[in-house]
Amino acid sequence: MKKDSDDSERMARLAAGDTGALRELYERHGRALLRFSSAMCRSRQAAEDLVHDTFVALLRGPHLFDPAQGTAYNYLCGVLRHRISRHFRQQKRWVALADDDSAAAHEAGPADEVARSEVSAVFRQAMLELPLQHREIIALCDLEELPYHAVAAILDCPIGTVRSRLHRARALLTIRLASLELLDLDQEPPLVQLS
Amino acid sequence: MTETMHPQVATLLSRYRRELRDTKPSDALDARIARLVAAGDRVSPQRPSRVRRVSFWAAAASIAAVAIAVGILIGIRLGHVAPTHGAQQQTALPADFSLWPADSVALQIPAEYSAQGTLVAVDPNARSTGKRYWIDVVVSNDGTVRIDRIVPAETSPKKGAPDGITLQTP
Image (cartoon, rainbow over all chains, first blue to last red):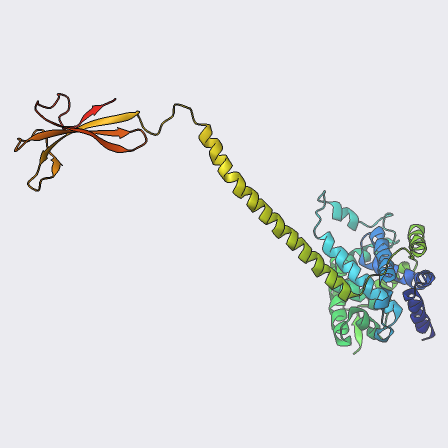
């Protein structure tokens, strides 16, 4: 709670023109935002660009943050999410020069800076193949382990929607992992109960 | 509501999460943010949305006004250009060009007085019932028609004019 009020104070300082507050906000939340962005984007460079754009947006409109609506992190995450969404919309307008360009990007290897192990690289590939809506819910709920109410605030939707969307996303991920032979669904193991 | 997950998926997620936790911003990103902080004073915050909206509509109205003005100017210019173009075409015609095939044509038409006392054209091969006249009609190259003269037909019509019309060029 103290941290949240500190963030609100930083936001107020930034709105007043103290750009040092931007540095503090970046040091506090930059890494978490980059994790979320990296989980969403295939390219590490694109993930960093989007985080940078988020802070540019914050610098241009700090007055848009309303502490009554949620925490500074939730606000920044919401901004980043919109940027990611726009990034993918813009990407659809481009056509790859080589047919196997995306396939090369899918391949796990030393170039993949996010997933170091081979298994994680395949898992990451499965994640990146999920629709954006499902990918973001897994990134926020299962990777960032944010509470449902925080995710609902970031996605600007009811908690019930978060739950149902997460359920569908996990099911899709499970099927995708099975198709990549990372899972054996025939064994029917007991399900793990999550809080 | 308790969420459930396949244990292998949970394991994979946990593993990926640990690797993701090690993600750190690159030096390049740190430097970009540092530049952003340094340049912060020069980055002007966005104006309130209402002002932006007014600016947008003002810009749109200006563009529309300029477009209409350009359209009117083009229209006026085309209006001026069209007759000049026609005049150029006329002057480009050869000097000896005429819409008429000859300078003028003279026609000789046989006519007789009718019962009503008017002179009417008759068939030259028909038998004459009264006094016959020749009407010389001249059609000028500008299209005007005039009766040149009317003379009594004391002699038979000229050969080569079976229809009673004799073409003459002055």
